[in-house]
Length: 266
Image (cartoon, rainbow, N blue to C red):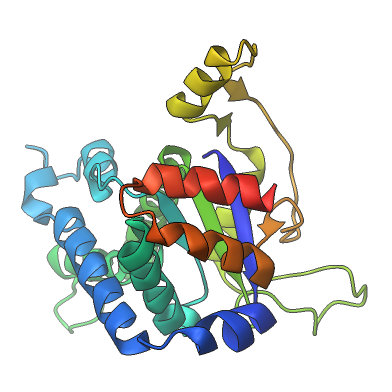
């Protein structure tokens, strides 16, 4: 991960999405991209069974998210899934940017857990063994959390849809505190706080050409039990308006467009 951004709810709904004249087309592009990633992710469970009948968790975790080559990790609430797909399609259409949508894999986790429970924990009365199914769930969700963290680490940029579906202050006495009811959002945002910050090689090389000496890794470690998103720079309407002008540079790569965004938001 190199950069982290957030889109607030008012800008996302009133300014950004309302100005999209081709929402359905963008959503279709986003769904096609999501389906491609799902196909790459989904593997037969039998491939990860060891001779002793146990699951090779390490191999499953490694293959859960293969090298999908995404530029942006999009973190969002399940209720904002359609908007995430539209935004994904927009970025792909105009900037050539491939987006990894975290909700792509939540359903797969449930499918995998169901398959494991049906194979190992189903009892004669068609109910699941309580302690065994709990143990299976803890393993599946731990593997998923680890794989998501790995994807955040490998993805250059994270974009968080900061909406009332993701964060709320209704149960918080201090108005400057934000909390989430989603364990996945909590885990992902906390990961962005403690994970290593890595400059892309192209930016390091550009700095070297200018005679600048910069460390390729900026270690940043911190801990938070509240869902603090202040470290994610907010993208505004002016930022998007400026960035959208670059999409007409058809010879630009997705990485070039991202570099432009970094300069604009900076």
